[in-house]
Length: 353
Image 1 (tube, rainbow, N blue to C red):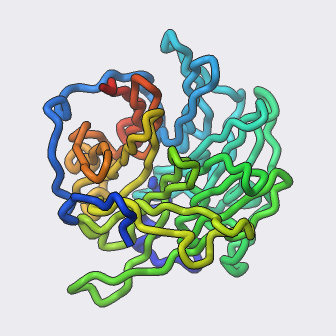
Image 2 (image 1 turned 60 degrees about the vertical axis):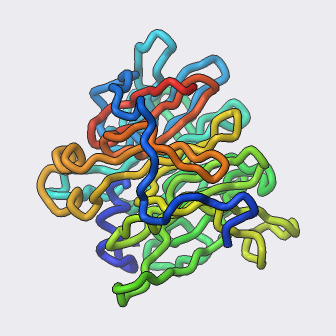
């Protein structure tokens, strides 16, 4: 990816980083109602992490965290004790950011057939931009082949970011910001494009803006939903969530009508998730993403320009956490919303009504 991507998009992604019938009532400028509880302090579930990101929960209630900067998968028990699932560091990719101080390791986790799978993005040798299966406390094995960063972007990983189980493709659907695409990976590790998104334009900005798909989730109607970060200059209110479904069962979602705009008016989306009741939750990375990545200590910049977490329900968007520090992972249960706050090094929880 490094050889073919726009530099501005590299900076953001290495580090994190037709309305349907119901419509969307947002004004399109990112200004939403704020819940009375949005300023309340969230409870810390686990701290001391290095860039936590993707979250999943096991059937017995253990929370698993993809610690992308630490190169670990962290297990948090219900009593809040935590441990690494492996004895050694997992694969990671390019060191990035000021002074190459930030690493990009595992970014998302899947639980499938009693196995734990994880993805690593970017490029650093044969272990990067690949999907792996955890084989024990000291073992992991690749599921997908090594990525050639100089090959065409078609039918390969560029920067895999988030993952959703997908029995319709006998495996997974994965968001790939580097390719502006969703790719499908079958259980044998074969990779094929699922849908590729086109750039878009905004007034007073001559260069087309890339979509940059990030968080992906299964919706209550069993379709796949994906949020978009958007590329530089990360325009306020231009990020959106799209609905994706293979309607003709041909193995992809590239035909007319298989992708449609679902919710609009967001800014720099890094993850989405749905609660059991069908409510959608959206993580916005920052109020000023350009300044977060302008140089210096990103953790300090992220506190100065925090993100937020939103609830989207029946076309109405409400801010439910107004000062989340670089939120990049969400997970909703019936009672709780878990939030990875990447540059704060914590996972927090928010009670749901």
